[in-house]
Image (cartoon, rainbow, N blue to C red; front, top):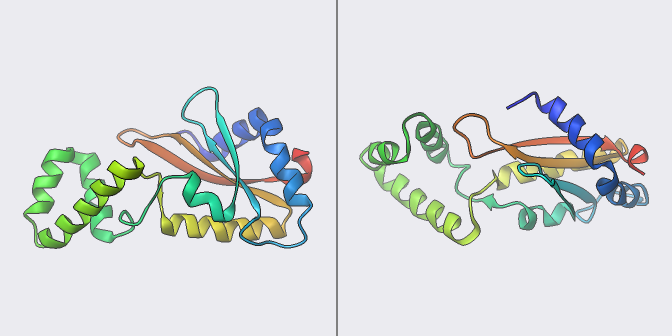
Length: 168
């Protein structure tokens, strides 16, 4: 993945107009709450897709997982990128934590089947919500961009903010 700061700058400049409504809405708010606007950018394809949502609406806008926060699943996902799904599955299904992993794997595949590939975890979404509160206090609009993944990854996620006065 290219430098996240450069990606954010490019997206801000390219999508300023599409983000301006969210910036105006943020400026008109007296205090932060879960209805504060945030912007989600799907930067994996052209044209880029910009979605204005609120903090509360993030997990409905971005596919979010309950399972990928588990340390065992995180280890699996790293191993999966190194050696491939089939070999990693055999390794984890026969390891010391096979029973726990089998439960995680079932939940993970159910999530993928029902909602698609998760972009981030609920912990990531909660951290972004806190970031949006800090951004609000600084007059900044919180943004999250889903980008093309680095080698061996399906996608990347970067978070950044932009001055709401500059947007509008």
